[in-house]
Length: 121
Image 1 (cartoon, rainbow, N blue to C red):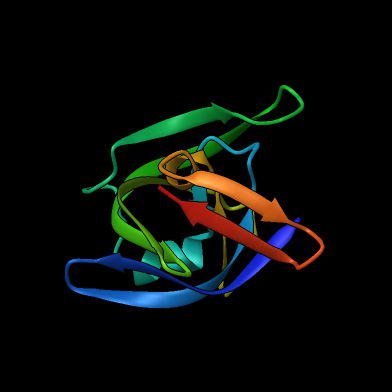
Image 2 (tube, rainbow, N blue to C red):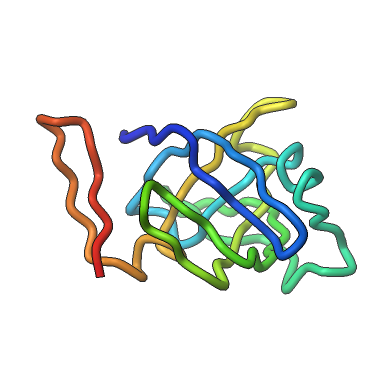
């Protein structure tokens, strides 16, 4: 597991900084409900809602939204789909999961010896 500090996630009206876990096995980026509230995600602006498959063959109920941009270090991706999952983190958590909706926009290299991840185009 790779944890990245100070990841910026934003909308056209503002941004927040959070810590993130990089997960190459996750199709979506995931935010807990607390952060979804800060981003003003609600039923009126979601793209879809319903059970989505997870590793192990199970499902998790998620709302899916679109975030204008996500910045991890110097890498910025636009138009990133984000799932909201209650099971991801506890109440008030300020950590997100960065999945393939961000990672796939870059050539990604993990340097575990130096404890860093490099996103390049």
